[in-house]
Amino acid sequence: MNTLWFWMNRNVLDLISFLSIATNLTRLQSLDPKWLAIRKDRITKSVAGVIMKRKFGAFPYQL
Image (tube, rainbow, N blue to C red; front, side):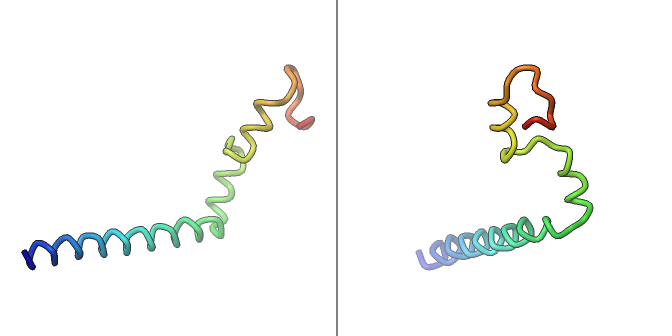
């Protein structure tokens, strides 16, 4: 039983460690100029609602 408990807890700790690293990398990506250049022309969640709500035929600069 102790061996199973050890392996289960080890996997949980590995997962927590991985998620922590992934979270930090996600936060840091916005500091990369390449990431900003790629993201600049994409429709993201932050502008999707504005695009969906604009009037038909409106030009993008009229958002």
